[in-house]
Image (cartoon, rainbow, N blue to C red; front, side, top):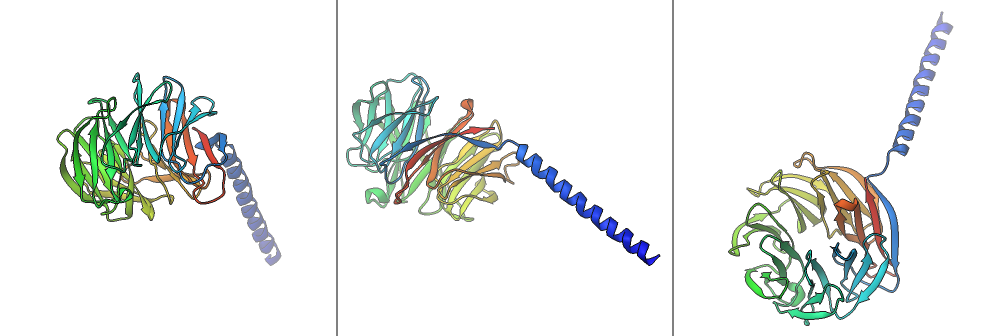
Length: 349
């Protein structure tokens, strides 16, 4: 009887282990067959570049993708459909952000150098004029309804203790109005479409400023206590939420866009310089300089969930989401290393 009992126990253990192994095998098979949320489609190498890249812009009329090569002092032009590198535009000191307006004859490129930001011919890329603002022009936000581009200037990079937000005519470069911040490091902004507010990161003092962009009056200063170096922001208008990308530590902070209340936090990659929000698919993408993209589900905006970590490349911290093409394009900056600069295009599932 004892022998039969022992044999029965051994048989049960064998069947249990076998079931686990088979289940694990099928789970692995299912995982292997599940398409990744982002899939690398092609890579374009840019040998000879050093330092950092900054931001992209899309020119749909000419099927072009533009990239500000910040430390290289150039504007790089790519074919939007194939990703092929077409040409390099010189004549910049430190370009950062690019505004391409549908049907416009000019392109605005912010330049933090002493030669100021540039207005270029949309077809030839020849310089048509300079945008004379406070030195140190960097981040932008565009309001198509008013036809105004908001430009961050000043700050520590211009050896100033204050920064300025200027409202500019993107065709002529004329400054319409401005607001000064008592902060030497001001970063990215988000503009609401159904109201007059503009949200902008005051990175030095670890706050988010709320501005009435029509009057250029400061409405509120909301602290961001969970993390430091809040530098990126995306607005989820439907849910009245702001997603703030922070660098110390890498984190996304969710904030109520009506009250400034912090409603959630989730870890994010380090050394990021971009948040890419796709409201239609409830996805938020945060590229990190250490070599991966954090992909988040925003269905419950107060409880963001990282659903994937997609390998990219070291230094790939800036990018652009092109929703209708279902693509994300990243610029991999070589920084101080001897790595080859790259532009990576990912298909979005």
